[in-house]
Length: 259
Image 1 (cartoon, rainbow, N blue to C red):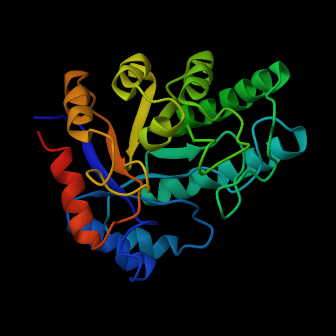
Image 2 (tube, rainbow, N blue to C red):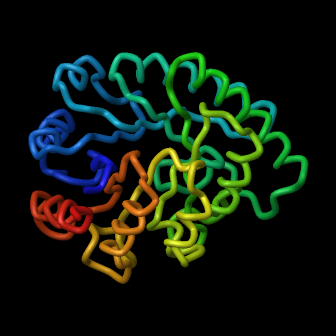
């Protein structure tokens, strides 16, 4: 039996329901729950659901590399840690830069310089220290440049792995998103094995369309077997749109990851 836990992003399923009811529905079906930004949500109502929150966005704005935006990132990350404490949420997710409501970088980057790499590692090192002190983990998510997030620095899984390994702290791990990695890099099982202990979470959706496993080209049953062979014991989260009925989409997700 696999040792990982299954979770679902409440931002992308049961869209006909108010947000708190989405969370309740996901929890009733036996999954953990993930959320994105928290500023527009009723945190007390979410906490009262009794849901097991596994991940939330760990910042509200800013980026990893620009002096004026680093301060904004750190300030909002500190506030996010307080919210994570209220929700008992272990993971706080980060991206290579701040994204707008459509997932496009607020400040797109054409070329990532060596100085930007060093500054990003330094900023992440500070966040990792906060994570360690608070008993939480910041996770750095890879994104795809071709379809959803053009202009994002440090977007490839190889980039996020390099930064996580450079920081070398239990307070910073990878959020290895296999949907994004399939579009940008492919060779997913070898990628998972390469990342190994640097992984703090796995996110999944199928390609094309970013929908539940079984709707596209990724062999998620093989992915599940590989994760079990790796003895991966973290979270596997569906961060994808439901193709059709959300309850059926979650059933298909569970089926693909049940060994």
